[in-house]
Image 1: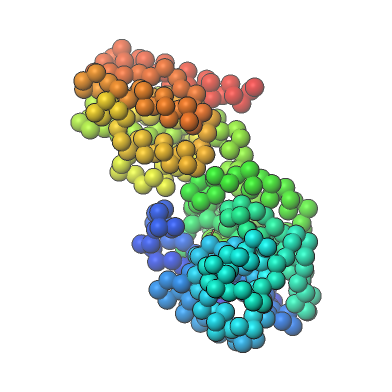
Image 2: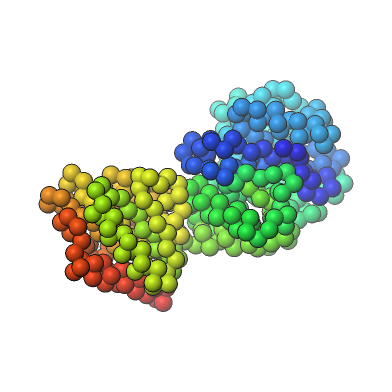
Length: 409
Ligand code: FEO
């Protein structure tokens, strides 16, 4: 990668994770992911965020700095927006080699620098409204934005150019090319792909902290933001509102339980009996005009499933009973949905059983934890009959009605 000029004296120094690496060791990134650091150069030089200490990423970061003429001994400041090691993994080595660098961060970051990287000197805690004047008109203003998504998180606003360095907020998955780093350097279809990657990133990484995202968006609303430079994904300058509105909508799903016009079907099948019903479910939902996401588990990665669940107010679970309990891969989805606080959905459960059933009890237990409103379950022994298909149709229509009535109330 090459460093990317944003405006005079301000650059992105970004790297891309290898495609095969799971993000956070957990989430698939088939389109890769970028880690974005930034340089702000006035009379003095500040770096905003570093890079993960993985394979050649620090080397690549340093080569980008060198290519734009930034000598490390001339860097005065390191701004640490938050401590997650995708942005700080190299920090211990960097400070060891450059002990003159002053670190600006929130007060909560100070002890973490010590415990993570044994760095305790030259650390300056900042609060919302504090500034750092780098000269030549470049003034950095700090905003504490706790729990977006780590407790110590802050963002930085460069006043003269209206650039918000937003940490993980407004970020997304997807590798980024040096010469295609901005939303206005890509065609609409490609930007939409990054939007989809941002939705998945949000559901996987940020969703559980949504009330704090809403608070941060409100806190920053007064700023004359012209460019959003997040720590992952595209830099937004043609349509800043697009990514802000997306994050605002996604954060809102924490309180309104998702889009009333979206349903996610999560299904599994052992011998094809539940699968036979899936053909009908698909058609019934699609005929209703509702946007429909479908995931078969365990074939589908959980990170993909959660992105659909987060957006959808309606959930359909279709699975066989397995040894008197839920089909285990579906239970795994509900467990992760609970961890990510995907509450208050409307849910219809159906499926086949071979002996006497038993999934219902476990589903009810999960629904209680998730505060999901359960519709009457539809079960069949063996393969679904015509009468059971009719019940499925009625059940889905009833589900859609209650999803939409939530919106009216
Ligand atoms: Fe991209 Fe929370 O680290």
